[in-house]
Length: 233
Image 1: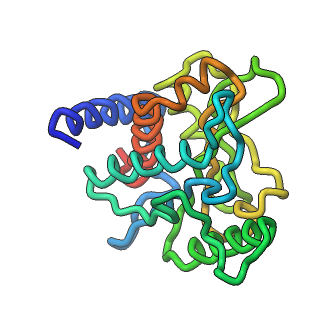
Image 2 (image 1 turned 45 degrees about the horizontal axis):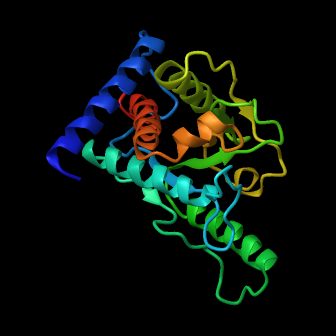
């Protein structure tokens, strides 16, 4: 990324961070503020990967690639602020064991390995990036889901509000608990949120989600929400 690109990203991040501060101007303490000199480590999970492409967009693009693009941008933006997230995958791969053979075995192994990787990170907080899909194309808007672990709901609500304020003021979706059928989120012991960035089944939103510019806006907004938690006002 050139110097102009860095400045553009910083401007987006500053705007997102400003939105956070407007939403919570009087926040004195936060769930994830560092204590005793050691803070929390953000774990970035780009959902799916490899043979498991996840949902497919209206133009035939698998969500796994969009998820990865957003996560890599988020990692770069946070790096500009001295953050060093743990990124579970940095390319279009599945994290399954070599012994896994069938697609089902690979999916199961992949999920088990993701949980194991997250659990091995000290003071972890999980942020998992996904894309939504539905049979009716009218639905749109980002939505944040939270794990049944302490601190997850607070971060999810804060992130949902930030996404709405920075990107889509008309989005009436609320943060919700994740269904217990989602293996990854129901088997971690740390705080965790899953962000459905938008609907690949909605023509307008799908077109946005495929663009690098909108992916950067999403990443910057997520970064702004996270940074307000680790750098409380």
